[in-house]
Length: 266
Image 1 (cartoon, rainbow, N blue to C red):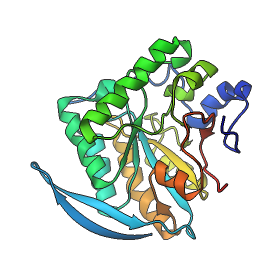
Image 2: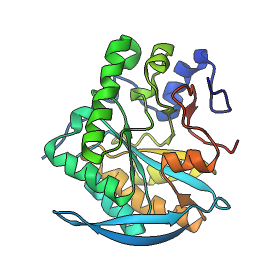
Image 3: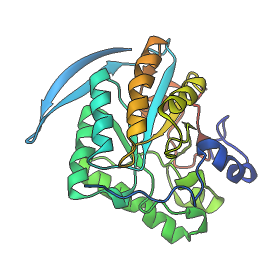
């Protein structure tokens, strides 16, 4: 097992669940689909022109990974991608398998072609601590296989629904687990300003920012238009989760028992 500062004692993991994201199984049902130096290069698909971001990671700058849960969809995810493209910053999207449809597959492909990372948030967004090893593996492999079909590359990281974890999940899932610094943006009562303020107050080098691109989450779209330029003004460079791990010298290992919110240099 890879033991490092992001690894917690198993007895503390369940207690950490709510603190990481503010979600509970009763509060956050699985959503459904509704009707830094950078240089750019352009690639063309059959349907649209996609701007693919290429950049050199400057490790003298503070690094941050933007991540989004609960997509894909053809509304909010598209709006998020438009903002990322506008500011030329990458992000990592943790997909729910049941939200992958023929229409939303095109959105996933666009994100991947832009240079974003596609990761795993389970098939059904259920409490996996109550599942058997076989059920857990089915939840994860469904998304892995779907993403592979769309992008040609499987998922590298897993975010547990509700950030609820147990030893059976660690034994059954061969990917590092990601938590993140959240602002409870799945809750409609949290205002745009509160989302912005909470995100900004949690910033530090190596932070993984946890946001949600569930269909209809327009307040996070508005907050993102404030968060990205503010972070750029503070000197942050945006990277994918994989790039963050690499920049900080953390091996991406199937035996990793960490639950990452901040990735620190080893």
